[in-house]
Image 1 (cartoon, rainbow, N blue to C red):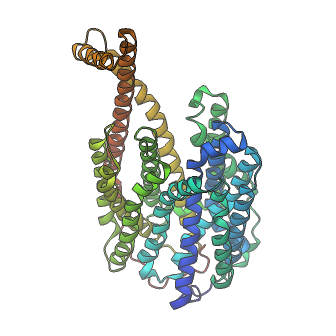
Image 2 (image 1 turned 120 degrees about the vertical axis):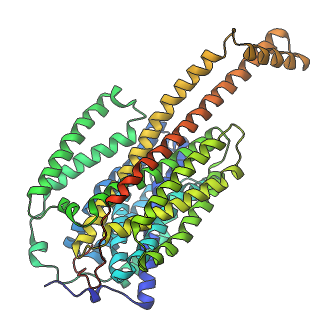
Image 3 (image 1 turned 45 degrees about the vertical axis):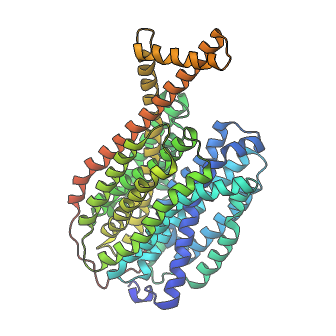
Length: 528
């Protein structure tokens, strides 16, 4: 017989401490997904690495994350929830220190992978713990608390990384985890309860080694492809083509294995429960939107508008804070009976309006103040997406189903983000080429406005003392830079517009969400 849910629900001071602890760990894990992105130049210089080699520092963390997240529920059962969560905090913290002490690029890549193993566990288990310690009728509020970490983490990463790189040496982007990790580990082992009375057959069941291997091979290969594909020109690369085949076969075999074995490492049968299937699809869309916009916006403003990493982070902060402030309000509304499926369409629509707004203000002269209100809009959209989606996903689940659903949706959300970044990277390259080609076709000797502009520029340079030949060369260079910038601006306009269309197309999916009454006294005895 599984334990009474009242043994898991917390009240007062203990609930506050546990909430702070798991949110702190979630934020810490998500900050580290993006904090390294602003330090690539420093790593190249200090470790003597190429840009391609440094990209593995980022890829290793993402690959480890996406492998561990869906296994977190199973590992919690085998090791005990408190032990698994606390050990993951310790592993993440120790690996952070070892990352900072690395003396070569491949040493750093290895310890980033280890750090990702610990970090992936923190994210999935934190969501489940928050769900467990709050009564069923307050799950909306619990989802809001977790959502604050998920939204703030990726935004704070570049901001914190930019500040550290500007004022300190690169190892500090890893050492900053040490004091927070020590505090979090102490609080985890002290306050988080372990789940007792797990049926013996679950603890004693044989380890699904084949399922674990297939998960690592299939999902790990897919994440590697998404992380490295654009840099390797996709299927022009032999190793990307090989890993694509490995990923397809590995994932197919993994799905088959988990559906036929009695005690799978990832229970895919959970997709038949409640709103887990549609919630997982929408989690992919959320990850796609969250990470793709966090990716393309910094790339544009830093490369073409001259923003520093710190300026970029500061410009993103108000929108992230808006999401954070909205989430408790939305959580309370859900707890009072507002249905998630009535809020999610507004979130998708607002996200679509945000991308359309940005596409209309993009120019070579756009400033930080021009992005303020669109990014606030983005924050509102994320707030209306994450909390209702998480609530819809977990409503009606009980026991270990909660952990299985949280882990599976977490993996899919991260893969959605990786797909978003990979697709946007590829489209940026292709659209830039097309727009540049169109600019070249337009700026010919037969185009009167182009020739008038060249003449005006040449005369301007000659009036400053340049010879005719030098003035002509300078005018050509100015026109070339202008054409390149315009092609780039047009490219990002197209990307934002396509993202907006994507979000609007996804709105009808929301109406597949079923109305499920939250159980008042659910059995969360095996939830992880």
